Amino acid sequence: MEIRYYEEKPDIETYYELRTSVGWDNFCIEQAQKALDKRDFFILAKDGEKAVGMGSVVDDGMYFTIVDVTVRPEYQGMNIGANIVNRLVELIEKAAPKGARLSIQLIAAKGKEGFYIKQGFGALPDENCGPALRKLIYT
Ligand SMILES: CC(C)(COP(=O)(O)OP(=O)(O)OC[C@H]1O[C@@H](n2cnc3c(N)ncnc32)[C@H](O)[C@@H]1OP(=O)(O)O)[C@@H](O)C(=O)NCCC(=O)NCCS
Image 1 (cartoon, rainbow, N blue to C red):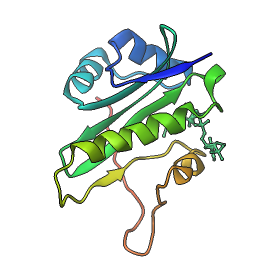
Image 2 (image 1 turned 45 degrees about the vertical axis):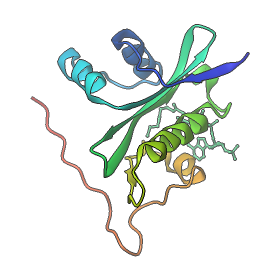
Image 3 (image 1 turned 30 degrees about the vertical axis):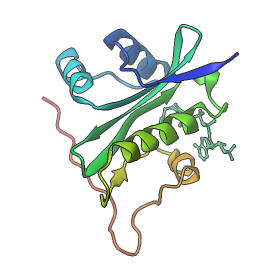
C-alpha cells in the first residue's frame, strides 16, 4: 500500500464520508459547501483512488485554524494524520510573506491533544494564554 498526499479539495461526498468514517456528525450542505469553497489549504491522503484522510485550514493570513483532520479508522496509526498536519503547516509557512507571525491553532478532539503535541503544538493554557473558549449555537 502506498499513501500519496495531494493538495486537493475533497468533493462534498468525500468530505462527508471521511467525517462519517470517524463518527462525526456532518454540517448541513449549505455550510459544508461554503466552507469547502472558502478554504485555501487542503491535504487529501489517498490509497490509490480511495481517499483515506484529509485536513484543511481556515485562515485570514494571520490566524490559521486546522480543521477536519480525519483518517479512516482502518488507516489510523500509519503516520497519515501526522503527514496531513505537517503538510498543512508547510503550506501555511510557504504562503507566508517574510517577517510574518503565524498563529496556527486548533481544537483537539477529546483525547487527541497528544497527537498534536507530537507534531509540535503546545497545549493551552500556557504561560501567556488562558484556555481556549468557544460558544456553539444550533439554528
Ligand atoms: C487523530 C488522528 C487524525 C490521528 O491520525 P493517525 O494517522 O491515526 O495518527 P499517526 O499515525 O499519524 O500518529 C502520529 C503520532 O501521534 C501518536 N498519536 C496518535 N493518536 C494519538 C493520541 N490520541 N494521543 C497521543 N498520541 C497519539 C501516534 O502514536 C504517533 O506517534 P509516533 O510519532 O511516536 O509514532 C486519527 O486518529 C483520527 O482521524 N481520529 C478520529 C478523528 C479525530 O479525532 N481527528 C482529530 C480532530 S482534532
